[in-house]
Structure formats: C-alpha cells, structure tokens
Image (cartoon, rainbow, N blue to C red):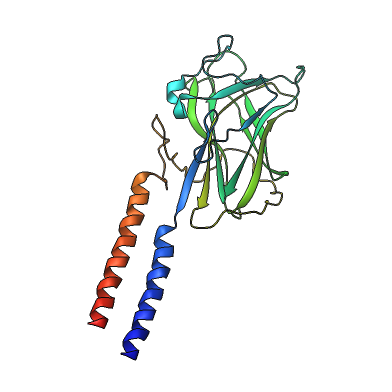
Length: 252
C-alpha cells in the first residue's frame, strides 16, 4: 500500500505539471486604432489631439477603403514639417514579448504618400520605418506589417510611434499585435529602454489578428481564437483522464 501511495503522489505531481503546461499558451492580442486593446479596451493615445482622421473624414484628400482595414477602422494624419502642430504620433502600453505594427500604405495616389516614423520602446530608440511610394503599384496597401520586434522580456512596455523631421509624410495606423505567455501572472515591472533596430520593412512571419471583420494578411499565425482555447481544454482533459485511469489501476 505504501508503494501505491508513493506512485499516486508521483502521478498527481505529473498531473499538475501537465496541467500548467497545457493550460498556458503563447497568444496574440490586438490593439485596434479605434477600439483599443481587445482585452482591456484601452485605445492608443493620438497626438496632437484632433489631428487624426477616421475613414469618414470629409475633407481628407486620401481616402483608403475602410472595409479592407482591420475592424474597418483606421486613423490617419499628414505631417507637415513647417506646420503649426509639430510632430505627430501615438502611444500605447502592452505587456508581452513581441510587437507588430500594421499601417495602410499609399503608392500611386495624388497627394502626400510618403510614410515615415520612429519607434520608441520604454524611451529607447527601437527602430525606424520608411515607405517611399511606388507610382506603378496599386494605390493602397492594406494591413501592412511596418515594424516588428521579438525577444522582449514579458514586462510592461511603453510604445511611442512618432513622425517628425524635414519631409512631409502621410501616416495611417490600422492596428498592432503583441505576443505574450498567458500562463504567466501579470507583471508589475516596467521594461528598460530598447536599442535601435534596422531601418526598413521587417521580414519576420506575420501573426494574424485574433479577430477581424476582414481577411488577415496571408502569413503563418499563432492566434488566440476559441479553437486554440478549445484545443488546450481537450489536451488538459486528456491528461486528466489518462492519469485518473492510471491512478485507479494502482489503487484497485
């Protein structure tokens, strides 16, 4: 009997280890330009106030098709170096290990179509994106990955996306995705400044948004949809069922 209880204790230990592993998951969450973080509902803060326009803007010269953007929303503005408002940009916070920014880019359309912005993470210069319009390309490129960074510690990060400098620029933010391990408890730690990253278009695989009214960009994905959670529950149930049968056999 003593040996049986030792085996039972070991089986329970294995059970809890498997439960911890199976119930945790690396997930993606979206931050929409308008609806904000899909979990907290907190939207980005756009600066200067009143300078960012939604799809229904009546005075805007450049009018992307909102139905092709994520959640059919976006916020856009035009930066003018000699204008009265100065730099334009937006800020948001997230807790996770990776970040992806998606913009609408413009090519063969009349008006200011050049796009440029700098990214600061936790106050550090974390990278720069530049899009030079191609007049031979389709007018609009939707849900375009313009910046990504991976390998961050899972702590609280502050992000600032800012356009400034000597060139006029069109800036149209659609949404962001951040990645985290939801098995870990919330962090009370703030991240340290992140160093610079190469300029240009990132080449990492593009994660899909966890929910959207429009088709996601074609790329490998690890999403936090209901099917992912169902798979975790099935795995956990299988582990419990198997160990329960094993324990019953021992105590019989």
